[in-house]
Length: 303
Image (tube, rainbow, N blue to C red; front, side):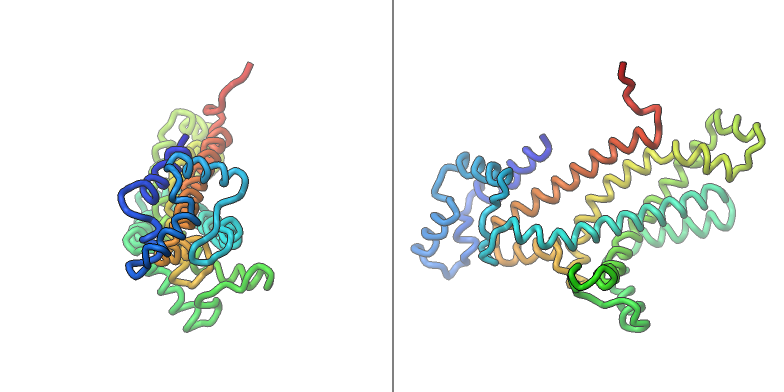
């Protein structure tokens, strides 16, 4: 349902609202004959309902149309760029969750101590600095000064896993740090709330230390709101790739979208936007499934 509504909104904005998409794509210097020819090529001379149904039907059959700017099938163009954006977003999410949950757990285990104050101060700093600024700092430090990682570009997976991974480390880390700060604060507050439950006091009364109780009993139950935030963060990470791929000159979907907007490639734009929406829907469905593994009480019992 979400995808259907998103598809309808994207199609309505790009092709139905007042204005000629063909004239927009060709620019103000185009002649009426050229505009009419492009309208026929794009099927804009057909009714909006027929164009919308044709677009949706083409998506299910893999026929997404021909890119106006690149003059190649949109499906192949997107598939080529997904190989960069998807690993980048997944790596950033893994880094954000690992760093954020670890720091949040450390802060909760040392609540109201100097360590807690330092971790929360670092998290607040991470929230205040935008990801592209982290990216520029990483390029200056790790690429220009130390020479550990490339400053930009992508060698392709065919050039080897290690060079490709090195090209994604800095942008993924720059994307992950602000999100890890959010997860650290949320993990800390959720753990401290869980540590006040009756079963936690029972575990402490049985002789478990605070650290053992936190790791064995509290952490798993405190992960439900953290998982919710991780699902929301994936959407922010995918959106962040639009900026980060341009900072590091990565040939991914984010950079492709910027180029499509600059070239008025409406066919490519509407397919990319719907792809981003679909990715967010899929990740949120995965998060819903993960709830049951984090907290067995949330599983639906079947007869």
